[in-house]
Image 1 (cartoon, rainbow, N blue to C red):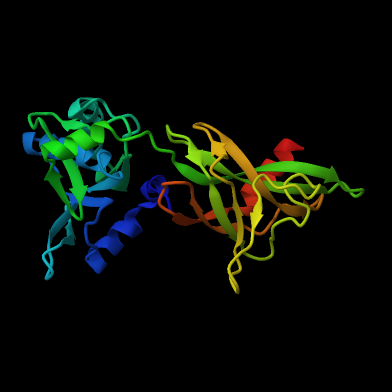
Image 2: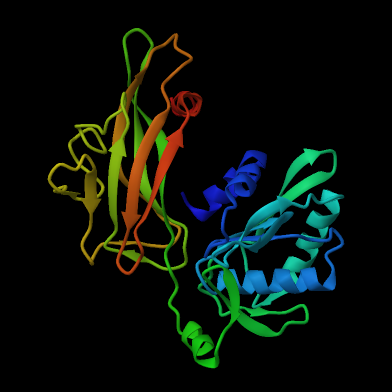
Length: 312
């Protein structure tokens, strides 16, 4: 699951789970209590967190959860501190985010999780950045990094290294529908195109993706275009492994902002049908000098029907 998918997925049930499980803070997750007025200390915390996450691998801040050291000395979620009025906190977060670090970090998002009326929790998404290093402002004026469950001040040599950091690609698995043909009874034969999307600022060399599709769906035996062609060469999988793997050489590049089609899933939508099974694709995706990431692409049957009929 990508950082943005985790950001969108956090809800009241997830927060309850954090508390019950005493979920530990981590490289990508931080809990904070907060005054909805965003006090001076809260503003400093915001600046340090945005700087630290942006200078590392990005992360999420869950506002309204009290974190304290557990028996291992690691900060963990121990209780709820609901925020009221919640709309005031969101207004303050949006106001101070643009001044929290320099240079300004694009892509910071805040969303509310409401329990009742104008009360609840908030979540902040801080993306990793290749435009840094980012200095924490709002009275802090220091560079930070995320290390384990802490935000640590960066040494001078670490700041120097970040100034030379190259722009990085950000890869994800995406899908869209294409109509292959219409059947004699008014049904639609379709292909769901699976592809690698690069939403980062750097080019991805030698991309690789491993796919496993849950029944009743399966990858099309006729390839991406119906003529046995694939968007990337198909590779031999390890013995006994059910994944289907595709990859390119170092000369193959997916440029920033590009969606590269790889393969397809075939299906048929009967004329009178308003239901389809959900599509579930387990994937691992990487490229040269990029850490392998794994996740699950889940597309509802309703979304598939809408997309197929919309492209017909």
